[in-house]
Length: 484
Image 1: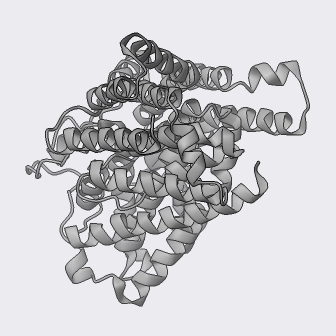
Image 2: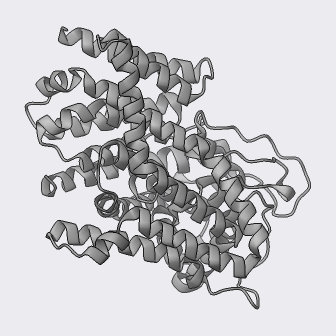
Image 3: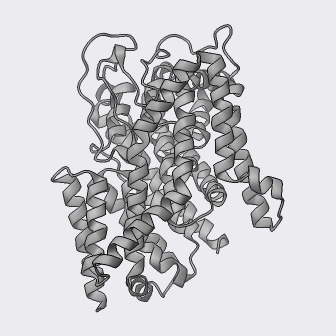
């Protein structure tokens, strides 16, 4: 088929998917599935092969990412039930002080805390964050809010065990350990530099407390609060069961925010904080160690088993469950696991359907078509996938959906260009961070729980995360020089 026809079909179908989600409120999973089928039929794949390709793509991605997402959901649910987040924030404040807390919080949220749903971390950590803000000066609320937004959103798409990062790794067949190391190389400088940029801007006068701040949700109030605006895709966060601040229930664990008020200090009999996070940190260390051994060409059967992400995270689930049973009891841990699985369901399906879309596109000749446009430099597809993910995110409001869709479109050309799939995954994740705005549930949660006006949230979330998106693109381009 002519190049213009193939490109036109894919472009029109993607536009139709975006309109279906935004204008007609069709669930993203259904819209993507119909879009994948449409591309297959319109590009001559045929009815039988279209269905076969879709199911194969779904299965291949879930084979890579399904169990990993499940283990992450379970670990996050149990940590939330044990009140680990608020205790960690309090500990970081004591350890790093007011000046260092934005960076300590940012790197924690963007890396090892990514097993916990974004919305849950905001709800649990916000009370302590509001107490920290005044100690950072007049622009403290803006600095803390930007730290939350930058780190939480960056981690979910670039850093394993973030759900979108795991999905991208599965979609592009990137070993999870390699995705973790590559993500770490991009995330750490991105978070630090983005927080520095926003801190300088806010302290230079870009933050106006009189106009950018307003009354926040009280820790223990019974007043009704405005309904939270849901994201266009629940895959980027989880829905809250109530809008009453005093009885706000998180979607993971399903229990009231018992840790929202008062100092988050360990009461007598509570397990040490390191014990709560120890299993997850150990699992991530095993995965990273095995990835390093793989890069060095060293084969060790024991490490190959223990460092496999499925086994490492499974061991973390078991160990966290044992700690949780001792800390809060069997019933509460079991209840949190059941609720976690329920709320993680759409993430599983969205990830698989993203694989279906990518598989259908790969079956056609789009890869050869794109190759013809990218001959000049291998940087071109990196920039294109970033722009594609950015535009999709502006339209749809879902970082996960936009990253997966952009990566799936560009993936067929990656192998023929000699471009490492890791770089494609990181570029898609970086682009999906651009211009998070009012269609995002995270935008409204950060506004409500951190005491910002809409104007303030546009500065901390929309501008702050967009700065991180551009920096992450730069870091990815630098990494592409060394990764082939």
